[in-house]
Amino acid sequence: VISYSDNNVQYHIQSDEGPDRYFRFQTYNGQYRKEKRREDGTVIGTYGWVDPTGLLRLFDYIADKQGYRIVRQQTIKKPIPTVPPTPATSTSSPGRRRWPLRRHSTTTPVPPTDT
Image (cartoon, rainbow, N blue to C red; front, side, top):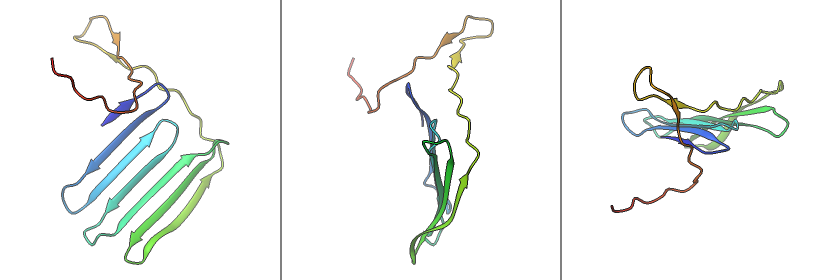
């Protein structure tokens, strides 16, 4: 699933098949999370965000029979530059004029309509 909005670009990837289930997402503003579930039910993962001063804050965690625990914490002190995404373009065939893709600004799903 890839979603676009005026202020935010994000991606989301998930697998519910096989012994190693995983989940990942990231947003344009620097927020992310990824985790993996092991066969025994243990979940390991990491999450982070860019704070208002531009510092990247990272946390690694584990959730198992002993509960949820942060196992490592890190702050990247050098501010991470943020670059706005460039508008995507699409072509119907080589050599034809490129038309910009329309950006969707809705944040909630829109139900399909009967036509």
